[in-house]
Amino acid sequence: MKTMTIRNIPDDVAAGLANRARESGRSMNATAVAALVDVFGDSPRKTRKYADFSEFVGTMSDTEYKRVTKEIEDTFEHIDEDENKPWLQAPETGK
Image (cartoon, rainbow, N blue to C red; front, side, top):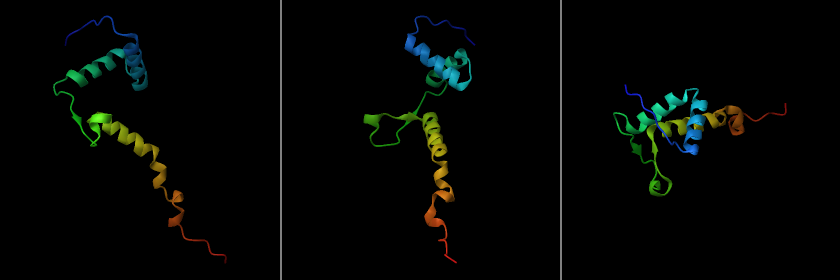
């Protein structure tokens, strides 16, 4: 493996790297290496189009798609619970 020094990193890029490292619980070095591998690794980063409007809104990688999908599923998990569907419950009888 090669060791490198990168100079003149813009402040906003360094801040973004620090935030991502903090959020992921990894070191800045590990986070930077992961980002470089994602872009320049053995298999180039591939994007998949998920909508016909990709030229206007962009595309996302498989990893980004999985992350966003998981966040949506976690956020709306409670919607699938029966107590949030009163139409599935038997009506109360006044007896």
